[in-house]
Length: 302
Ligand SMILES: *[C@@H]1O[C@H](CO)[C@@H](O)[C@H](O)[C@H]1NC(C)=O
Ligand SMILES: *[C@@H]1O[C@H](CO)[C@@H](O)[C@H](O)[C@H]1NC(C)=O
Ligand SMILES: *[C@@H]1O[C@H](CO)[C@@H](O)[C@H](O)[C@H]1NC(C)=O
Ligand SMILES: *[C@@H]1O[C@H](CO)[C@@H](O)[C@H](O)[C@H]1NC(C)=O
Ligand SMILES: *[C@@H]1O[C@H](CO)[C@@H](O)[C@H](O)[C@H]1NC(C)=O
Ligand SMILES: *[C@@H]1O[C@H](CO)[C@@H](O)[C@H](O)[C@H]1NC(C)=O
Image 1 (cartoon, rainbow, N blue to C red):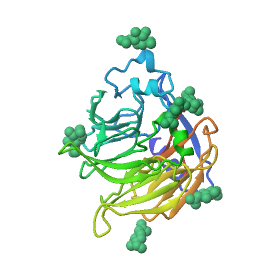
Image 2 (image 1 turned 120 degrees about the vertical axis):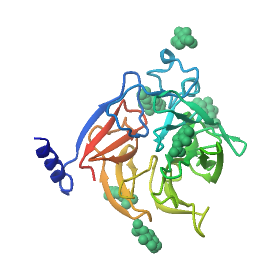
Image 3 (image 1 turned 30 degrees about the vertical axis):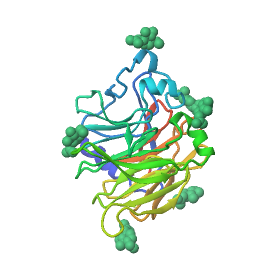
């Protein structure tokens, strides 16, 4: 019986005309806005970890920390998350900075709240290099908090930074500045570059880490409102694009920005669910969003 199910899934996936099947995975009560998704070895959602030392569940749960800085500064607003190879979870908290929490969860430890002497005001995208343990993350703006992202976009803010935390030294290095709303980062499988997205500038950019091009940056693609970007098991990347407010498409691109797939995101994603990204894990694609109270799980998206 198990085998029959597996055979059906494998058959259904590659078919170009298959209609994607959407499932919604509800989050625990009072929580929402799953901007990004990371996987450990257990299934299902639990209340796992928190950033703000003084977080008060009664005050914070069910409130809109994305739009309300008062709530965010008290309770935190995790945006980018990723596990390292020893199952520590790194968290970019929009209002509070960079954190890590052990595999047991609970209160996360703050690792950085500034870089190069300037406060991290809007921690956003994050990825861990599984080989080196280096943590790449972005500070979306030096001027605007997450709650002011709309004003930041209207004023075409260009004060974002790409940063790297080294777990061996505890130091944060600044890799690139003058970015326009860097909201996502993904490390290459061979550690030779990172891709970043700019949700204000509307780009996917490549920052080289090695060889003669090290520390140079190149625009690969122009796409509107790209946020979370993730690497696939096959070494490609997935990202979403807004085509109309708020109609989104999921893209799979290669290391040079060539678009390998470009499909509509449907199902439960509509005006109220600002899509932030898509990530492939196993047979499914998982859709992140800024306000929804569920994670979308899609079979046969690409
Ligand atoms: C938590 O927040 C609630 C609601 O605002 C408040 O009544 C309570 O006193 C707070 N608890 C602590 C420990 O601050
Ligand atoms: C949070 O606030 C934003 C901006 O005002 C709004 O678009 C969104 O629907 C709100 N989300 C929730 C869950 O209240
Ligand atoms: C994973 O992260 C934790 C917390 O920063 C760190 O202590 C540990 O060394 C990291 N593991 C690896 C393999 O980098
Ligand atoms: C951020 O938004 C608040 C509320 O809309 C506004 O009062 C404040 O001036 C804004 N700050 C900036 C830097 O735009
Ligand atoms: C990207 O372009 C370079 C230079 O043209 C080429 O060597 C490399 O194979 C390309 N990578 C992919 C994934 O297409
Ligand atoms: C993806 O497809 C949509 C609809 O055809 C199109 O508007 C958009 O430009 C495409 N995106 C890219 C990056 O090719």
